[in-house]
Length: 294
Image (tube, rainbow, N blue to C red; front, top):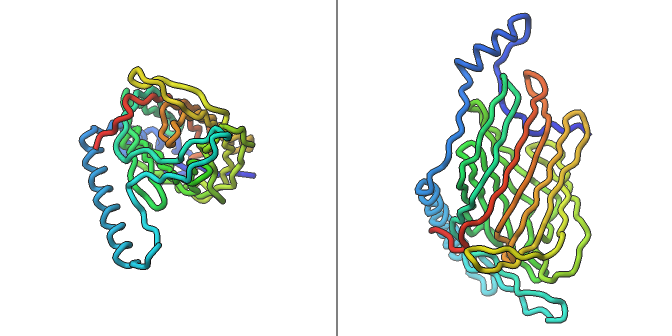
């Protein structure tokens, strides 16, 4: 299965005997590459705008759908029915909306046009806003790099919804790739029973993408001196075709789906007008506080 993902939009480079000289000229005169950290106050401003839009959307849905018993998105956490204590279950609720700060290390790079690398700042944020049946999480690493995913709560646990986004920008060329999967999966089970790994049939932009999610068990972390129970979840992608991808991301989520720690490595090769492009990424993050900014 040939997969053409991460097609960083590097265009306008003519072929022929002048290609090497043309690449050098373009690299230093046309395609400037920047890596810009987002100030927290800028993220807060955007977050408040997102909350206001979400509130207006919810108000419109409530006004347009007055039928008794209809459901509308809400910022309040969802809580499941109380399960049997014999299953070591917990009530299923989502984390409060807000902006969570993380100590971060890592970088991403491509080898196109002589290569470039983006170092990640020492602090990044995950913004949590009400969305649909639950919340949207947006991880801003740079102005040029972010991920988005959605979580919803149900009686069997916290679900990862089928849609998301991966955004990259190199040399001023934006590459916004929608993630669309065939189904949702349980990331944080309501019980501590083991579960089988789940392989999803997804597209990343318009290309096939097949991640496998495995819930590895419950552990404990410490945040601001207090113990926090977490679920260790691992996502892997193993594709050995010409345009390959090798990804491993370990997430440590609290029982409300909030990332407490994470670490990951990604390597992929994708086609482009100037030939195959190698992309690499490495990161780790650790939450600073369970109390979000607003």
